[in-house]
Image (cartoon, rainbow, N blue to C red; front, top):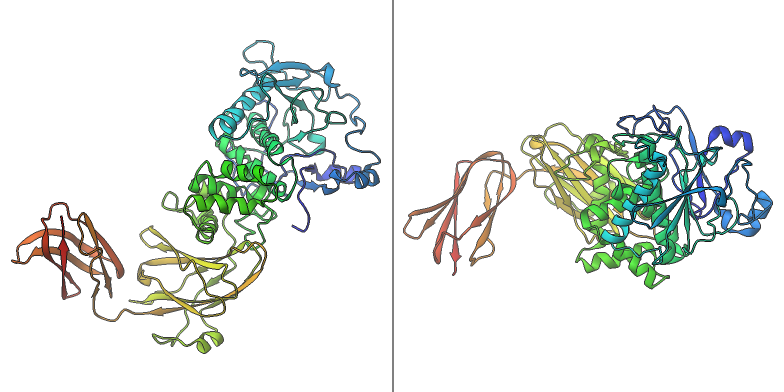
Length: 595
């Protein structure tokens, strides 16, 4: 990004920027920038609305993200604003002082909501249950309790609320700052925390009128409030784990935005800024992920959904234990404890982002909400294979090849997406030759078959730098709709370069039957065979006297590699014959069953 992403940043309406000359005030933990895009609807303060938000919504109001990295630097703050922020004046004259606000204790007793019912900071006055407490205030208290329950009690993050105390949440007009909320440590200034005994406090927008839409089923203002408190409470947890210091703090917004989706899955406010926004992994995957922010929330979501809900809590434990640990170092250490490798995991994370929008194939592969995510940006679409290439291709031929070639550079921690859509080549299969200049670069292929079945294949997890490697896909091109090629640089520091050459090959005319494995076997064994074309296939097992004992498969089979797992529980110990009949050919081999 070219700068350190500090906690002190928020959104300012573009019109406000023109009027007040780019004024953005706040403290560490300012939440939620919105992508510079138009929205068809905005949230009303209380009026019920059921709107399904699309990442392709069209704008009526433009928001701009005002990053203010100098707000942690007193000298820069003095030059820019003429005062330090913990000593700054209250800029809105009608703003209520902290001791003039009403208070409401959440049901758990862990959160005190501070609010007013008149003036610029007033919350909406609707009170559906007529208990004297505005609905908006009760919503805030419920959101705080829900955030605590999930983040502390279920995920196991450390508790930022000392025993016997409550945590302060202030409802205040933040719309003039373009902000949803903030988390602060200061006891004085515009966003003072007061004299509470917790290390931080939260400020949230007081009505969310005119804010971008979300998917809350009942009320969009309620949805915006819920995800804001879930987001800001995670900042409070971060503060007691890393004191908002060090490299890991640069990832704080991505981490906090994840909690919006985890605590309130149905709101989906984050859809507003994952499409064509900064370094999002759908349309901007070619830009470096480091450091992750709001738009990179789906990177964090992949690890939460696929690796496990304990993945990020365990990562933050390592960060709290050793402040010198970087965010990605912590992630890699936790991955090792789960017996998983970084390169194939990161490659699959990017493959999930490719399989989004119009490419969505969930539940076979990808994010649960992938159909609602943006279409991935395709760097290039290949429409022809390399021609006149023999069964063995020397490196000099690949070096000068033009047709069927993809070349590109990769920033550190980034990826590029390509597609291969070539007219049918009857009876042929796809061969990929790859050359990378750094072993951290890895390639994955997502095959979209005509019958709707997807096949995901990481080509190799240990790429060799500066040499060509051949990989053969096992799907007959007649059965393929298209290929998605995901090329990922997993290196955190070094950019890279790659070349791919795609050509077709044929299997000849004969079926190839491999020896079953394991052999001998007791419970199960696997038979592999290569079919030259789509054909009728039968696999049968006989004893040594020629008596039929088991039918493994009978039906139509696609060309290419086929695998069949066999349950041996009904066979006695001994030697058997398995016979393959396909393409007017018969092939037999022996296998042994042991007990």
